[in-house]
Length: 399
Image (cartoon, rainbow, N blue to C red; front, side, top):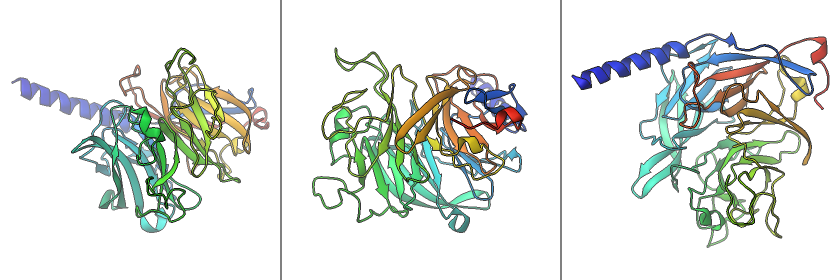
């Protein structure tokens, strides 16, 4: 009898979640502003009743794909969320901070419909991460192909962001899996940025490809847990956001924090755990930006502003979601130089994870309040968006 009641309860919960997730766009607040009030926008709810939407990608035809951490890949199109996922990845192991995490579309998605997923699974030697490729067709995912697997993982610090760079190569960030010593070891895939061809093979120009003591997939090393990845328009510099230790490592460490924004380049060592926070050492790369107290950066996106209905004032700005600080952080840059930064939507929608630019020019973001560390609202988790408000007061420059 208890099993029967339990089954009915699960069905009821699923029906409620599906009902909430199908809601149309709703404005959820008044007019918000950025850049000292010169840029105005409103916040709309796009989809609700979700479960830790970790990654958001936009197809050229305007469809929004997103990944929920328990293993679901879903699609929002024509103003509505499809009631059924396009795929449920059955071997996802979702516990702690891991599960279905990174997702990206092939640069030629309009031609080949390739979609890449990074997720944790139970391997023979414990939790691992793999990246797989599917072909999307007829509202489902087909032709599964493993790109890379057997990357050691843990309940925490499992990475994993995947994105294609301007060079057409697939970049993958990996966490140290809570064993910090591996970030400095070139024979380990942990605490690294990896660089692969779109079929999983290793590009011959990778920085360690000719070293017998190093994994040829490695692009950079000395990372703790990078979860934001994008390239600056115009310079093609790779930017990453990375979670710092958030606690003192020794008597000389600051209290908590140590979150980072880094410019990541081929073959360079980003220091973890040898240096952290604002420490420096010859031969090791210090962060462009460091945050103490912790903000918990969970994503990273340069706003390109190709849609004229978007935010021309934000063009070239770097945005990332902050889980602990419960905001979106906007960074204005001049190449490698930080001009200014500000926090948007602080303490209004809870833990913010992904940030993505839509084909409509809006800035989309996801909440992460059902991840075990937040305080969910009735309709969490949500995907929301910033929509520009056109007025004479909103026409100023972003700086």
